Length: 261
Image: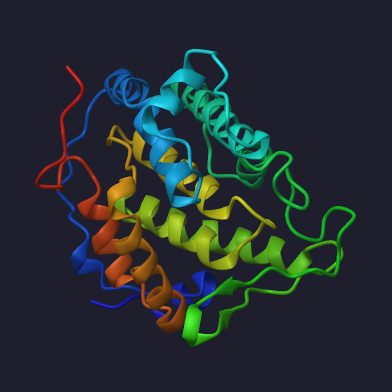
């Protein structure tokens, strides 16, 4: 079943709702937070690999232990440290019941994730000093995907976010709602950089506050993710990406390890 025209207009894409399971195991908040904490190094490493960061899994674990890694670019190390800090901050928000799907929270997390990496961070494109540069996504031989242009004040982006969150809030299935937010943030590119990383946190915040385990996109599936992402940008059909995200969830991935006890 396809989404209504209203939802497509608000989010910029549609999907077949039947590909998202409605029966999803739910747990106590403490349990899903414990699993996220136990898998923190994997979540950070997966996210860094998808961004093209060369840090190995053992090196990420070393940084998590508070020890610097020699022979790596400072920028690569800072990117991983930002992911570590933002992951810990995100987990604290969820534990304290302070996570919410708001622009303020979205910008707060992006401000940590993309610090000293993005052109500007902590606010939507156009709300800072830069008001003319508009980012794009290279689609290889398919050309480029270009989101809304950067305009002073970011009024259009602001309205898009408000309407999108309003529509997403109406989706009763938290797994579908979380995955849809990830695609919404990745497609619309509210920030100069860090959109996918920040949108994954927002997705997982939606899931975890509903008692559903978080999703990480495994580093080993990065190529598959990028192929499907290109098709998503080209077609604005999120069905394939929804299926992919569901397949990365520990309760639906055939080979997903269970690290929580």
